[in-house]
Length: 111
Image (tube, rainbow, N blue to C red; front, side):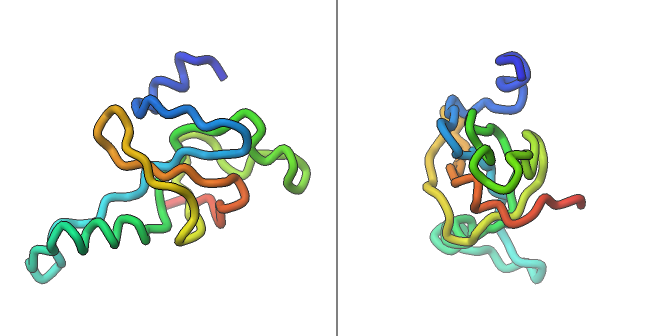
């Protein structure tokens, strides 16, 4: 994968190393379906607990030590990952990302 393709989707300034993956969690809605606004602290907690996000970048050795070494997902895929996996970190684009281990991916989502 060329560096040009990587920077097309990865505007974070974060490049995962080793078997790590960079994920952009799905946003938590600002208000409920009933129109009640959620306080920012509640939204932040919900965001941290989110288990679905878009795979933004893949470390160079991701999935090499697992199963047959075949990648479970590609950049741009929507994935589900372990609820408390990873470390939250801000990107240079002011988005909040999660850096997870390759074996924290539970599923590739096709919807």
